[in-house]
Image (tube, rainbow, N blue to C red; front, side, top):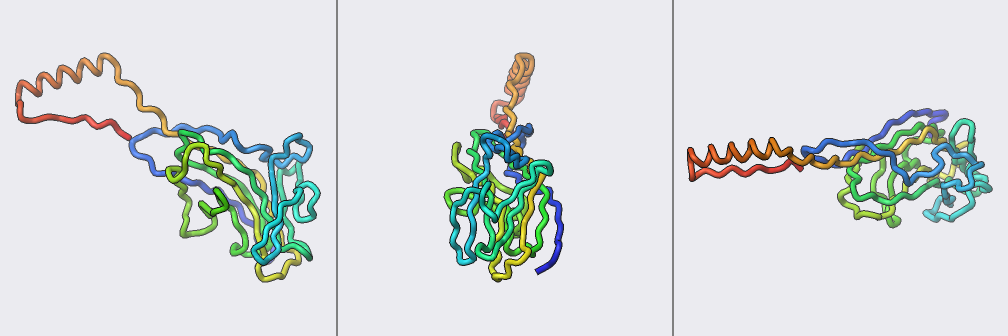
Length: 216
């Protein structure tokens, strides 16, 4: 393992879009991105990992695996003598017009990247691992349905059973989506101009037709 490896990440997932302008909007599903323990709805859930693939739900506010610094807006996951690590997660629903996901955060870890997972999950399956080069920085929402639940998960599980001083700290989380803007309706002047062009074209050649395809 590496000691005191500190990293900052700005990761963005982008769905494929064609010919459409994009407008930004916040993902309303995330609660308490600053890990404020005083909030009535803390928002985050967690599981601890036993190092053998087992995960067990816990109260993150009382578990010794998780700790929070409301002033710094950070959460830390720490391996213990009994637990190999854990995962902190929150779930949001896919909106009808989600097109692009952007995720920004900072993290620091004492371990190498292999046991760390920062990704999106759905139905217990990994959708996208932001730290896996084969996944890259793109995530396509088109594979999901509206109102599907997606889990944003941070965590690690130390598979070499060398738990001492292993930790993962995340902070400055910001998640947002970009939605495809509606194609504007053509003005009456534009429609009239197109009609004139069509008439002029028809007078020149009755054998040629032109099809206008709206950008998608």
